[in-house]
Amino acid sequence: CPPVHQNVRYVAVKKNMPIYLICYSQEPQVMQWYKTAEDREDLSVLDQNTASYHIERTNSSINLTLLRTSSEDSGIYVCDRKGVVQKEKLHSCGTELRVMGTSSIKQFQNRNTLKDAIIIIQSILLVIFISIPILFFLEKASDNKKSPEEDHTYE
Image 1 (tube, rainbow, N blue to C red):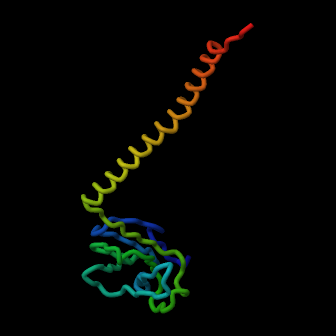
Image 2 (cartoon, one colour):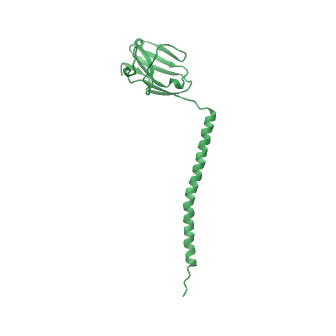
Image 3 (cartoon, helix red, strand yellow):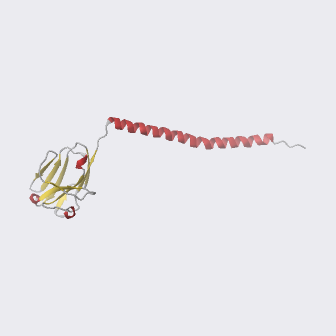
């Protein structure tokens, strides 16, 4: 990695939560944030403050604050020198951000109902597969007891 240090390599946040990414550098004035993704070749330059993110420079760092994260914010955030135009020119020490969606109450209820149904089906199958061999064994044992009584020897 170049003489920069980002605070984390991977981070996951809930939707609508803020996230703070910090890049420590000896020359933060010539550094900027870039956003990319593993499956894309394009590169987004994050250099102007917007409604969705804020960039702040100090003497030793450049900080990126994503204010209300959404699924579109998922990607790899890399702090590198200004003027990088190709993804291949970026160093590989970025921070991967994954924004996790929030489920609604209805989705939670549907998942719980599905889990309950699976547990009931598993219980029924367990009873069936345990009781059938036991019934066969008991039937066989009762057949063995009956046969000596019915076995008559005539002289």
